[in-house]
Image (cartoon, one colour):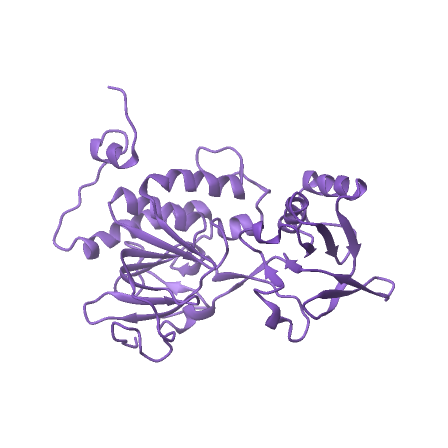
Length: 356
């Protein structure tokens, strides 16, 4: 693995990075497995930061099937991707993990003291004693609008899955997309934007029926415009769409918000020097550690004999990986196994009072 000095000036490092954030653990991925891993680390009094390329927690569980029912979470007869993510966020809240959304971990390099220097696409850097890859099948990144050279408008008048809609108050906004997030974004903007137009390639949506009904009610009331068509040109001030009958329509705007779904990319993980098997990381089944000391992989990103890509299996992997980190974070210290039912120390950490 390539070595870099403390300022991260090795090959491939980001230019002029800020001082690294020092942490016991860095989790790459804020999906259900990453969130439960943070909880398990908290029980072991291991501090952590969490980085995710998406603008909010939940990973593919929220982005791909946020409203669809999930029936195989232990003790929970039925939940949804969003509800599961919210429950896990509530569960881990006592440990106050630090989140870094909208960033993708770009580089990893071993330091002379054994720690790992990680840098992100946003220029954030971390010095971590341990690293946990919980990135599913890779980083989920927004699908882009297929118009040549449209990328130069990103962050100015073009936005993909923005984490806040406050910036669009009083503006004319066009929302492009047809899933839950696209419709929810258009509906939410009606309250603050001057004008909102939803654009989708057809008059049919891959969204929850209740959300579609809310959208159509706003259209019927004249509060939300809806146009069927495909974006074919954009100059930063207006979007040209081509309708199903091959006519073109120009939509003046202040901002174009694209919610076209997300797609997985293994991305920089492939360049970290880790051994890969069919785009997955081999691990042992004792600690779910990779063949790189202190680097663990849990969830869909890893592989081992008998691997099953289920959330419940990821929870098991996260638990053993957290325990595996104790030998590195607390060298020479025997960490006792404690139970949340009886341990006064765990009750203190969780901020709960258990009746005697």
